[in-house]
Length: 265
Image (cartoon, rainbow, N blue to C red; front, side, top):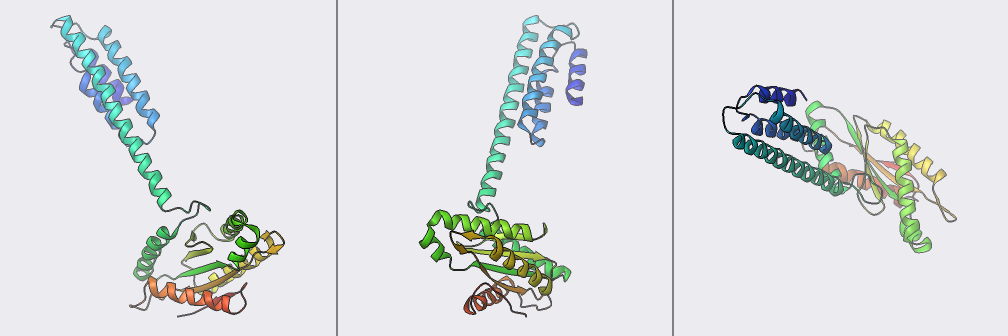
């Protein structure tokens, strides 16, 4: 608004009325740095109105009236063109952001997907090594998920996945990140959390799901594997951490399911 008023005042003081076009276009282009599209529309409309008012209230011209009229028409064209370009750019940025979210989000549960997991665990490993702060990884697998699908159908299987996901989200902190990395497999990164604290949270998740999630006549249970990142080991990386946590998960499944296993470094 301040820029619009400044341009309008300058326009009124210009004897030839030549200030109207480019300055208003620049003001419209400046709205590119404001996310909301309606701001660009509003600035463009106000610019057009002020351009027309400037025609009637600006200082007397020393040139022909035809030149002034042409100038005003060109000014409006510049404003409209600038607004069109800005709006197109904003819409493109919004579509790109939307596609980025879709590419990193699981469509069924709306939590982060495997792509997000691979990117973020790599970043967390680097952060842990740099600042010497622990973090823990948890892998969760829904027990007998194929039997759920075969017995009750894929709709109920999807229902079970969503319920498990919701119960996990209700059990972890906002600083922790949940990912669906497979059909019935989830991962959680617990930032700045040692293995003992992660184990406590894991047990709460396991008990909560066994108590609350039911499909048909069957209770849904999960198996859990946990390990922590060893930031003091130079050779430690995300692959070794994942493999260790995956082995802990299989240990839970091989020992009867509905249990939690831990593998320390």
